[in-house]
Amino acid sequence: MNEQDFSTISYESAAGIARITMRRPSVANALNSRMIDELDAGLSMAETDPDVRVVVLFGEGKHFCSGHDLKELFKGEEYWAAKRVSTEGKWEHETEMYLNRSLRWRNSPLITIAAVQGTCSAAGLMLACMCDMIVASEDAEFSNPVLRMSGAGVELLVEPWEMGARRAKEFLFCARKLSAAEAESAGLVNRVVAQDELNETAMEMAGAAALVPPITAKAVKESINHTLDLQGQAQSWQHHFALHQLVSATDAATSAMKQRTEGGMSAVKDERSGTKT
Image 1 (cartoon, one colour):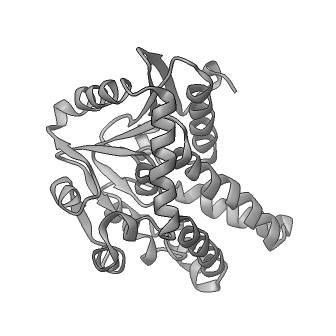
Image 2 (image 1 turned 45 degrees about the vertical axis):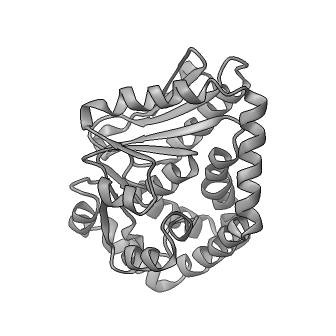
């Protein structure tokens, strides 16, 4: 896949910085399979460009990312059932699309920055947290209401690592929405800026990070990530992914997903700050 093939993202690079922008603003940049593929391809383009040192991830429009495209997810469940795809086959597919593709952002040798405005929810929050740094505009709102919808949340349980276990439990069980200021206080984001300063601030941060030699950036990222893995981060995510697969396969989860996608979209609209998918 090359830059001309992109339909859900845009890619541009200059001065050692690659800008990747999610471009499904009509559905608050909800992640469908096409966008996940293109985000992965965009990251690969940045990693293979010897001039790029930093990647900045943006969301076009009012919102950063509202999560996975629920209509596509439910159609996917119907597809697996109709094709009688084995549990193992579904597991392998979701491991690649939702687990490995996410971890690529966390483990990239490049420095990654998420510039977040508006809604940053569920899989959108997971994606942002895979980046090394997060800068948020004052209107940003962080949430993960998926426990009320289906499964055991999204594929990577990032919250305990970002805000501590006790805050994470309230955030998840009570479907809390954190303002940008609350997210900064909880340690979820690095910096909060005025809405009209988000783009400039993210690029200034990227410019500063781009001054670090690539070999140094790669080594320091590996060292910090290794420290987190020694504390159990990678293993905890693998464990949660397995639980997520188990719970998502239950009748209760399937029913909840169906209610949200067939006649129950008003609930999703409320939970995703006015966004329908």
